[in-house]
Image (cartoon, rainbow, N blue to C red; front, side):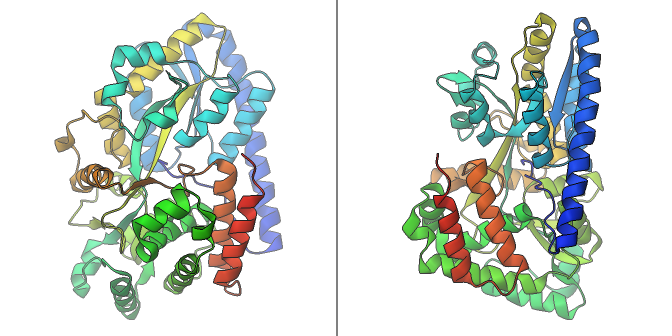
Length: 441
């Protein structure tokens, strides 16, 4: 998100939904209880300059990446109280509860598009003095600035820029079968059919709405092209959203369903990635963070795995970014530690180290890309090339393009359609358009 949005699992059955809600409620209560204890501990050691840090980077590679920032921060003599949340839903529930109780966490990792809502509430620390000192206007990736610099002031410090439209494939399986990464939808079907014939699951995915929505966005680009993505998604043009082209997008998205295995509901993204790594599955369509898991497993690009744009996405770059924000405090020790964490997070060496673990690309434009691996360098270059052609766009599935409320409607419609074969493309389009009309912003 960017890590990924990591929305919590949607189950197909009523029993499954009840179990999911119970589990989700348990996780929220458990994290709230833990944060209460951490709050008391932090208050008692405020002079020791400790910060509570709430984040949703919990997969192996993500935790390793967070560790880079944590280690650099604590090396300066500060303390880090780790508050990991399983998914953004859980994080946001905990955050809202803490804010309502008057004891927000000191630092919170969130998607960049979510920063504005807290700025509007006057809840965040103005980082402008640090930004001016660090020349953020010049060295920060330009696409991030509108999300983090609001009303002329910076309120968030980015950790990464991630490309969400990647095709990951098992290189050894492809070589054995004489396959090349597909560049068109027709080629994708042909490759998928050959993988099926060889006893390999063509497409690894988890039946969780943000994963399904990520795949959908790449199909939208392949069917409608970048101009249609701009009109339907960036501009939110209603005529485009309810057009015949959008119906064709859903039609093609339905075809993707036949290439997934029956056990996909509720599967985490990193488990799907492991299917590709082991050769159980041939391909996965998801963001840069997949590579983080492959790096963690000591796999090598162009040897063990390959990376390529999804079919029809070669010239288009869909992105997500995450950033740390800092909630206001009246404690001088906490304020000093918040400033230190902001500076640490955007330090060039930390940016590089973080993204080498995360599998993504730095949020700074002055980092030496030669230190990045093949796939990361390709992503770095693709971002620049797409931006120069006006084809770099924010992703909905990771809360970058639309508000959380609208993104939620989009993901739920796409997920329901993917998981319910009886739902027609026309019905999905109608449900999407009508659902968006209920959101007033």
